[in-house]
Amino acid sequence: MNAIERDNEYIVGTYGRFPLEIESGKGSIALGADGKSYVDMGAGIAVNTFGYADDVMNAAITAQLAKVQHTSNLYYSEPCTLLAEALSAKAEGLKKVFFGNSGAEANECAIKTARKWGKEHKGAACNKIVTLVSSFHGRTVTTLSATGQDVFHKNFDPFTPGFLYVPANDVAALEKAIDDTICAVMVEFVQGEGGVNVLDPAFVKGLFELKKQKNFLVIADEVQTGNGRTGKYFAYQHYGVLPDLVTTAKGLGGGLPIGACLFAESTASVLGKGDHGSTFGGNPVVAAGALSVVKRIDDALLKEVAEKGAHIKSRLEGAEGVLSVTGIGLMIGVEVVPDAKKVVAKCLEKGAMFLTAKTKVRLLPALNISYPLIDRAIDILLAAIKESL
Ligand SMILES: *Cc1c(COP(=O)(O)O)cnc(C)c1O
Image (cartoon, rainbow, N blue to C red; front, side, top):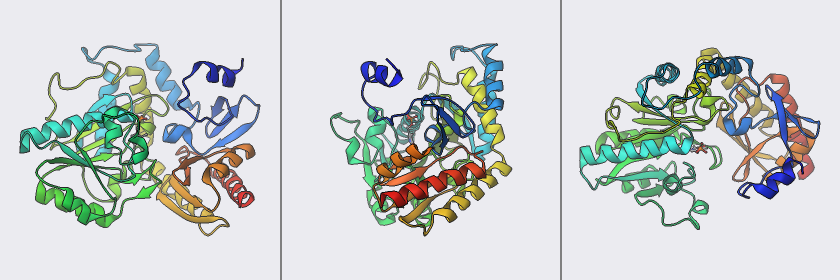
């Protein structure tokens, strides 16, 4: 049996995979078991911040691996403290961090914190969280519940109670939803899985004005948008606001599993000893790799991300078969005339890996992808769109 046959035989069928086995890679080029090379415009869904087999990250990981691969959280360990310090500096105002292993876990931590904050500051009934329609917050029972998409709310009920959904960019609907039982509003500043929808600055302004009037927390789910993806370290930094809790994951570990929940002063002392934990959270090898990633996301790289994003947009906007282009930095959604899934399948045949988000083609390449590779991938995308019309 080859990997595809063995996968079909032994792995539970939760994924609709493309017919490609990725064997190795370097930078933004993936090498398939079919002997072909592919330009990777998905980066493992915004995870491989510096592409495949990155030398700097590999050196950081292997150096730590030779020392300690894991300690329990009953002892102190340096790598996660250095990572927390570095993240705290990037977040400018969110000082403390809790480490888990995934985006969903980071959100679970934020949700627990918001509920405890609500009880302590506004009473036992203050435990509900408003999220947005078309949001995506994860696959655990509680984060599915937080996710504002009906397709996720089938078959797995009963869901965790205490979530309500309002349409994005509708300040009036948000205002109507807020009462004394609401402890937090959770948003993605750019919705990823929901279709690369950028939140309206007026909506964000309205949200923070309401927060001031009605006293609730704002949770930014930056699992996908964080770590330089949009051309700022975090997407909330485009809006000049400071959330009370920020969650991140995907690009943070550069390809190794990690999630983090960051706490502003308003929430830094809500969780105390015994309130939360994770066996693997803050793992030294993963933290050492993540530290090497965070350190390299500096102003020069962020500027490059913004410029590359602008270049991609300029090549796609107004092109044949392209209806609209949304997103910021290297998080881009392309509404196309043909079926997006068909276009992406055709791109793969032609040697480029793209993603979809709802009805759009989605681009989430490594932040250090080169211009020639961007252009090669965009040429393929434009040809695939044209051929699918
Ligand atoms: C991917 C994603 C999650 C879930 O992350 P996992 O690591 O798969 O648990 C949560 N929120 C957003 C915005 C995401 O894009």
